[in-house]
Structures are given as C-alpha cells and as structure tokens.
Amino acid sequence: MDHVPVLLEAAVDALRVRKDGIYIDATYGRGGHSRAILDRLGAAGRLIGLDQDPTAIAHAEQAHRGDERVVMAQRNFSELSSLIHSMGLDHQIDGLLIDLGVSSPQLDDAGRGFSFRTDGPLDMRMNPDTGISAAEWLAHVDQATLTRVIRDFGEERYAGRIARAIIEAQQHSPLVRTQQLAEVIEQAMPPAARNASAIHPATRTFQAIRIALNHELDVLEQVLEDGIDMLAPAGRLVVISFHSLEDRLVKQAIHRAAVPPPASRRSPVAVKFSPQLKKIGKLVRPDDAECARNPRARSSKMRVAEKLPREQAV
Image (tube, rainbow, N blue to C red; front, side, top):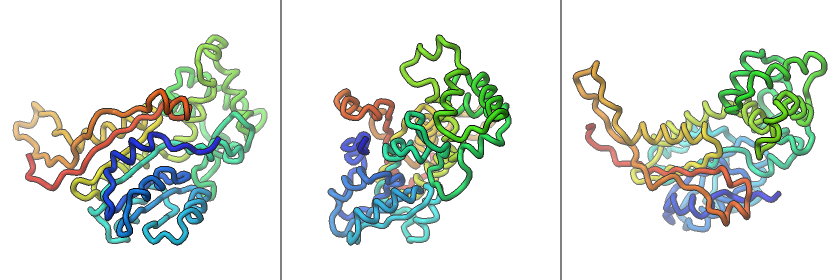
C-alpha cells in the first residue's frame, strides 16, 4: 500500500504555516506532511525533518535535493531539543508536527517485522541499525515483564495467557519470525475471543512489543516536553496519535501546560502558574471519506495547541 498521510489538510491547516516560518516534521515517514508544508512556505521559510529510519532519510534526501529550505536529520525525536539548540533555534519554532505510529512502508515491508500479515524476521526496530530486535528481546524477557508489557502497552485482556504461551513456545523453539509469534498468540486466546473482535488476535500484542522495544511512550513524553519549550510565541503544536496510550499522554501534556494544577488542601499558598499553551479546538478525527480512502486512518486522533507569550505567573 502506498503511504497516504493521515489528516493531511487538517494537520497542515492547524500549523498555520507562514511563508517565512520555521517548521519541524518530527516524524518524516515518506514526507507527505512535509511536502504540504513546503507548498505553503516561501523562499525564506525552513523545514526541519527528522526520522530515525535510515530508509526514510534516504527518501527525504532524494526528494528534497537542492531545496535549501530543507534540513534533514536521522534522529530519534527524543534528540530534537539538542538538535534545535545546536542550530541556534531555541524558542524560534513556529510549528511542530508529530505524526506517531508506524508508516505504511514500514508495515508493508515484511523485512522490518512490524506486521504479521506477511511473514518476515521478528525485528520491529524503528531504526534497524541500533538496539536489539524483537526476537532477541523475547528470547530474554521474563514472563512477568512480558505480561505487564502486553497488558499495559497493548491493553490486552488476555495478557497473562499470551505471555505464558510465548515463554513456553520459546523453550521449544526460538520465535524468530512474525507469523510464528502471531500463531502462538492466536492459539493462546480463547476461541470465542479470537472470533469476537474485528482485529486480528495478535494486533495488540504486536503493538505492545513494538512500543516497549522502541521506548515509544518514554520518547513521546520527552518530545512533548521539549517541543512545548522550543516553540516561539504563537507557535503551534500538532500531534496525530493512533491509540489511546499515545493520545492520553498528548492530552495530559497539553493540559499540564495550559491549565493550573488543582488547589491542594495541604498547601494554603497557591502555587504560581505560568501557562505555556492554550488548547486549539477539539479533538480532530478523520471523516468517513478519509477512512474510506485510507483504512489506516480510522484510529487516528489529532490535538492542537498554541504557545502563549511569556506572562506573569498566576
């Protein structure tokens, strides 16, 4: 499947791109959002693109060769703050776009090991040049940790049964292929549960292992904190997420930066609070037409916030 950017027009509209502005696409993927931003930038504008996937960076360098407005960096977006600081652009970013999840090319490439729909090596690394693969991780993880990962990151009600089945299967033969793992997960679930859901029985467990392996929620918290700080006054933060764990972190980060903490009965002195953000609009979801064109957009959610000028604490 070709990569179709999710909420393309809505996201770029939310950035309110100025011709001379500085914008960051923190998850370049195959550059759909970046191209739309560039279409609205003038000659004095700048686009900084990040992706930890070397294939995505190679695509970007080919697509934008000769465009002096574009700077690409192969980085995990947890490194965004240090990159922006090194460029001397602290507090000067007019818009930060973060499109979470796995891109269609990554899902469709069996060699990356993100999907169980075609058999491939059990890898799941966003950057295949660093860290350990999912197969290596599963070979050493204990049952209690695996249960917690599947339950907390996959929101899977049968986490205990699935973790036990995976550990038992590993004792007979190492799990090194995606369809091997998917079959173990499917057989571990009660027959009624296998047939009751519209999604494949392995979906939540694959998601959980991928999140744990790539430390996705930790780096998301980091980039949200850093991203809010690096924005210029009136700069926009636009985040597209694909499951409830990500969306919850985004919602909480915006709320903490926009709304004073509740009063405490234990502290008679009110804590001074300087709001950094204001929320813009409501939660945005794709309409029926977009979901029909791009089924992978169905679970997407977008939140938008705007950086406030530095004001007196309240």
